[in-house]
Image (cartoon, rainbow, N blue to C red; front, top):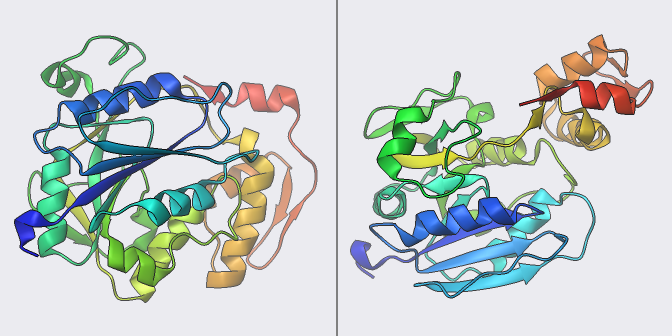
Length: 283
């Protein structure tokens, strides 16, 4: 198959963010290069998400499970995808007009794990009608992940892999075994995937040019609402790799007296209170 004939599947997972999903779909509608298909995995949203007629093929899969089974949901999306290339797009993201085409071309040329740049929007951006040029004016880049203006930059730190917007050849994803489903709920499953790619000799590349806009939503710093998931997944990661992931969050948990933590030990001392969780919310 010629490079320009390689197909690409866009995969996204969602739980209770139907509005964000609608804007993700709108971004794909405006793409210069349509995906060959969009795969959506609904992680037991209430009410279940739905989709209208789209100008490209689509599949909607429902997982009847609690929590946020991020690893399992991404694997479920990949399992039904038919594209030669996979573009994972977080439900909070709006693809820029050129992203799908750029990722398709780059994956045809590079056997790599490729992250596209994400630019963050404010609370009032992309809430109704929007134009990409206007979003670009207001969006801000990530303070740590430095992307080239154009082209590709190899990154030697697998901890900088992020799952918000990334592409990989389907054959490589299958060879890596997908996301490790021993990570349940929220936290560390994407860092583990980045470490696994490095171990397999798959380079991590940051792609300049068209990326995605991240739609605003309230968050938590640290994410105390996922406290038990983070502690459990950190232990799984340490047993697998011998280092601790999510260092900043674990440090915050320890400082708050929630965990006992050192180079080899991680144990819960107490769970965060509802008041502590609420106080961690940032807008």
